[in-house]
Length: 144
Length: 288
Length: 119
Ligand code: HEM
Ligand code: SF4
Ligand code: FES
Image (cartoon, rainbow over all chains, first blue to last red; front, side):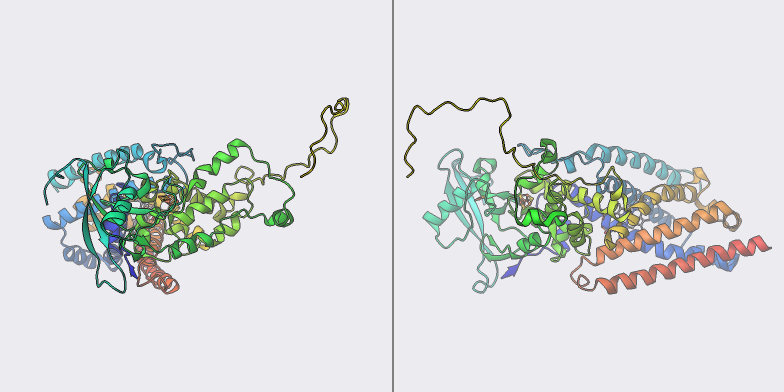
């Protein structure tokens, strides 16, 4: 008997389903990236306890002032914004807000739990995009 | 392959074929199926193949009217009930028919459902009333429930156990121990029922690793469910309940569940003042 | 109801982080709000490290982010085929890493604050 279990491949594609299923994967990806960043970040920033020399050494080590590093720093902000905005939707939904109430399943089915939060997600995504545009201006247009 | 089918009344079925133990690996076999009548379904197409083209094709079905949940499979990447999907929903005329992913294949389009039903049983899918066990074991009368109390869970009771939601779930894709959307949805089906008093027992089962909280609200279960059950809705409500229990807020009057009472015994005597029935005019029918 | 409590805290920490993290990103990465390289000058670092509200915010943030991040990581790991039958080991390992990072973060933050306060 062959188990056609999709494995991690199934996080990326498991059939023609709703867009929220991709957000599941993106949320995981960004979550893991943030954990990795946070760990390194705590170690790097901890150098300040060992005096100015250590701090400036650490800043040189991570490449402060390097435009490539600056670009990755911006990507980090994008990751944070996505995770925060999608996380806000998840927190509300998982606590039973924004997802509607049980209804008689009359065709075409309302599918409320995924459809109802969509406008909220759009609004949040637009706010995040505005923030990110402002951040891009800060990162790449303003003199450092 | 040609971009369009030759004839608008012919449908090309590309069917997943695999017999574990016999075939080394799965392959796809192509059949041409005529549209026998305008409302012809995918299942009818498969039965046509079985009866006219290839009797070795295995497909499971029973009710052929979206009630038994036997015929779930994937066509062109979409989870459907074969008996509930018309061929004309596929204007390209091409159908790639596969068994549901994330299940073991018995043969061809048939998937093995043991694990699915095992998970369903784990959440105690029946009324629990530890508060008055005597009534549950030797029922005397019905429980009283208002129509609005019925609406609280009715949607979730439409499930036909087809297993499509489980096949669509990304957590199931990596974790076979995960209870899956159907079982987790069933928790809300019973916990939200005013006749049921087993909330803490079911929460004990699902509030564990591979349980409730391994749902991350991807919503694919709701998207795919052919009966409009909305499992994701049910599961998020159970999460809310789990949070309330974790913070002991379920004891607040606002969140406390009131058990539906047993119906009062029928009045033994008629209301006073009603005159007795008149004498019979026709003889009583002889007892057969 | 062990998982439920853990998740309740995870969600609460997430809601908390929503505010703290956006404030943190704005404060330190956006030049308009005094962030960017100017914020990473030693003098700016020292000013923040010696301000009591800033230090309190750092520590709350540290705890919330580590708890949220590592509990989330644990939940992801226990769904993978390799770890799904090793839940206790995953929880243990992940907690140790989280606690070590917390203690290091706590030490580095407090050491500077108390030194500066004493001097
Ligand atoms: C900006 C504020 C944040 C919010 C609103 C937020 C929200 C959430 C929520 C609601 C979840 C649970 C989703 C689910 O049901 O699985 C989650 C998961 C997660 N978060 Fe966050 N989060 C935030 C910041 C962070 C940070 C800073 C980190 C890293 C340290 C992080 C790491 C993770 C990880 C690793 C997961 C688990 C991912 C998964 O299992 O799919 N989050 N976040
Ligand atoms: S919830 Fe819907 S998709 Fe899942 S088993 Fe029941 S009927 Fe099928
Ligand atoms: S055959 Fe019963 S649901 Fe399709």
